[in-house]
Image (cartoon, rainbow, N blue to C red; front, side, top):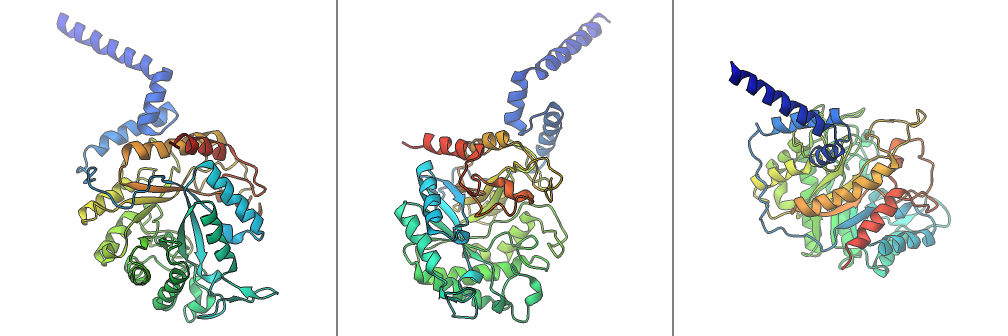
Length: 422
């Protein structure tokens, strides 16, 4: 009887001590670095989820594998320089990006903005005076070289003529003839041979509207990727082919119109089954924090968080690609204001500008310390040319305002990037 009382008192004492520790600031900080959550209730829920993760089969991550295509400086940023009308603003953007310590820009080379009016037609006749559609892209490449920045050229978005007989797919849908896209890829690669060596084929083909008004199709995307891969390697064997960044989603509706998506992990495995493994040098994922912080360590296939690419890594290792890296094409948290006039208010999660500025450098540091297979990480995004999209939630991922006014995120990433310099 006495021993039962002693045990009960010990249990009660431990419970009281644990409760006191749990209420302390120290506990909150430690649990944040374990769960990525800021509040106690969310942290306790995450601890339960982490415990459930231990019941699943162990992941095959091959952390000691020799990984190719890992640059010395992995800091990148997404740009929309083709939308800047003034060359001076393009130059100012790249100068700021270089001076801040970034090494890479992920820049669209938009098919519909280059081969605009018909196959083999590279004149822009949308406005007078007519001019070469290459002019601004030539300028972007020259400026990037001037400021020592490397380009990840993102290829996609077919022109209207390439949708002939297939026009109901919308502007982002694949072309009616995949060979037309392959021809475009070869022309761009020839023009910038040796100046651009990293090419990303499409973006988020597993969700609407990036594969058009139709269901996502991993097999079709694999075929498109392989055609582009073969042309790029034919132009220059040193070209690095980056697969499309897959959108993190657990949706199973196939990504058809209106809205929706197809689970990125299943889509990725189906790409392998369709033969895509030979057709990319670098896999790509999106590194959005969404609804938790940079140290969320949960790895549930039915949950999206900033560590979801770890599950992609498991798929790669199981398919014999332990030597390939994953590049995170878009990383950020959304500092959207709590304003009901903004469309899709909670679509991407919601953090304060101060949290955004704290979280993104933390994610880069976590990748450096914990994910040896992660290469370039590109912040989404530098700036837009105007504030016309301020009523849309995604606008608030920006690092600078259109007039170059910096956000707290820009200042934080600038400080982080400069701290990495030797």
